[in-house]
Image 1 (cartoon, helix red, strand yellow):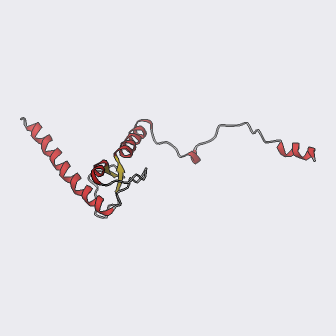
Image 2 (cartoon, rainbow, N blue to C red; image 1 turned 30 degrees about the vertical axis):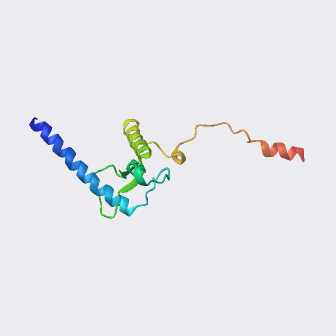
Image 3 (cartoon, rainbow, N blue to C red; image 1 turned 45 degrees about the vertical axis):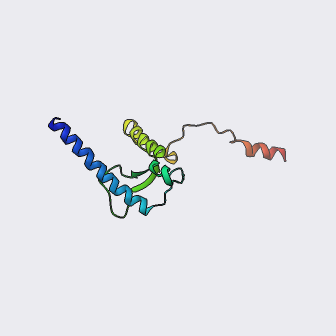
Length: 118
């Protein structure tokens, strides 16, 4: 085994230890429910519940759990896909900030038409 392989193996071992620590803490702090889809977990299915770091920094593990949320593997994957999409295409503006390009107003003269019917 090369020195580089040793370094990679050690980094992976440390990451696994770190993950085990904050996952156990998160499972003690939060209900075993996905924060996105509200699916409940117990027994063997509990392994499908993951800890998501809200700021995407896996080294940011405050003791109060404020950077964590429990997500099922599907919602967790979706969250990271969404982040990748935003990095690639830029931050998407919320719907209320988007400017409308529609100029047609189909009911603009409706009040006048209704007045004539009376």
